[in-house]
Length: 330
Image (cartoon, rainbow, N blue to C red; front, side):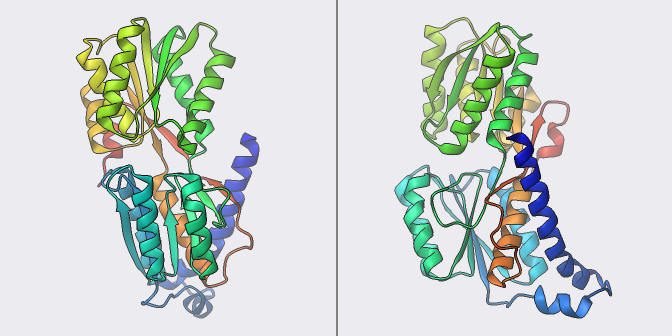
C-alpha cells in the first residue's frame, strides 16, 4: 500500500513537472520550446482559480494558498482564497456554492465533510468548472484528484515518535475531530502502529474535539481526571494540539504528559518553541496548493494526463524544538 502511494506521487509529479516545465522556460528566458510554452502555458488574465477551506483563519492554509498563488503567477491567472472562519458544514457548503456560482475556471477545496460536498462538487463539474480536493477529500464526488498528506503514514510516524518520547511504555489518549475522514485515517495509522509494534503502550482514550479549541481542552481535561496514568496525547488535528496543551497545563501535568500535535499554526509552533508541546506533524501544504493549481490549469487547458492520479501524497515531517524555527510562515 505504501509503495503504491509513493509510485502514484512520483508518477503524477513527474508528469505535472513535465507540463509545468514549459511555463518555467517561458518565465526564465530558456530557449528550448520557448514559443510553444508561451502558447500552451499562458493563461487568460480573466481566468480565476479559487482555494476554499474551513476554519479559514488558521495559519495552516497560508502555505496552501502560497503554493497555489505561485503556480497561478507562473500561468498568468488570478488566484483567490475563500472559506468559512468556523467549523460549520452547512456554511462551508454555502461558501463553495457561492464561489461556484461565479463560474471560476477551477476550485481546489478542502472538504469539511465528504458527503456534504459531493453534490456541490458534481454540480460544479457539470457546469464545466474544474475541481480538485486537498487536505480532506470527497472521494465519491467527481473531483479530478486529491492532494494530501498520506494520513495513515502520518499517523504511523506520529506513533513511532510518541513511542520514542514515552520510552515505548504507557497509556495514550487520542484527541481529534471524530468523523472527519482525513483525521480518522491518521488515527487508524497511529492505533495500528501502536498495536503492531509497541506491546507496552496502549490507547485508552478517544476524545472528540468537535473542531473547536475550547471543546478540545474540555474533552481532554475530563479524560485526564478519569485516567490519571495517561502519559501521551496524540492531538490529530489543528485545534486539538492547542486544546491538549491547555488541558495538560491546567491539570498540572505539563512535565508528565507528552503531546504531539498536527499542522503548523503559529500558536502551536510557539508552544513547541516554549516547551508546551513536544512535536507536531507538518504537512506539505505548499505542495498541496502548488500542484492543485498546476492540475486545475492543466485540466482547463487540456494539458493534463487524463485521468489524473486520484490520490497524491504531498509529504509529512516532524517539527520539534530543534527545527521549529523553519516552519513559521515567512
